[in-house]
Image (cartoon, rainbow, N blue to C red):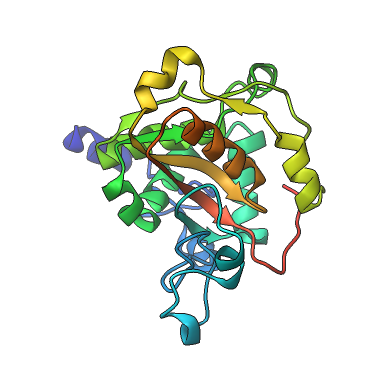
Length: 242
């Protein structure tokens, strides 16, 4: 397999996922340098970058005041104009080839969460939206991530019961109302999650309303714990629609 790939690369030099020539598949050095990856110290509860002066704190003030339904969270990078372009290409431009790249990012940023988990669950999309989009971007990331981490992949453990409006442009309270009771674990899937530690996978974390709705549904169905791993995270000062 490796020899065949090397020969193919000699005939057709590999290109990066952002379209520039490269020695290996992924992002070009120029594009890679523009991504703001999140490294420690980060809040263990929501993945928010924390000042080094607060590195001794386990949780940011927001998580201390109001803990999330998900136990822990990690994001690979900051959601900004550079990462947003890649995320939206996967989400709306049929660039499912980016899912493997994002899975590799998550395998690094969420390594400690994955080490504690037993299975990976993608945030679901409603069947009507799935027909329009043809795939669930969270599932496309979760599938290779589960394989890399040696965890069980549970694509149908969680369903979206309502075709909710886009979360883009809504306030935090509006986002929570929009996804209220939108997620559920089908009775036939409860045995897959009961008593198990799960990692929920999504593309972007904004206010956390979607992730909290999913985590509550999984916990209500018997999951032992739910953590969250996302590609990109909006900072406290951002309020960009996605």
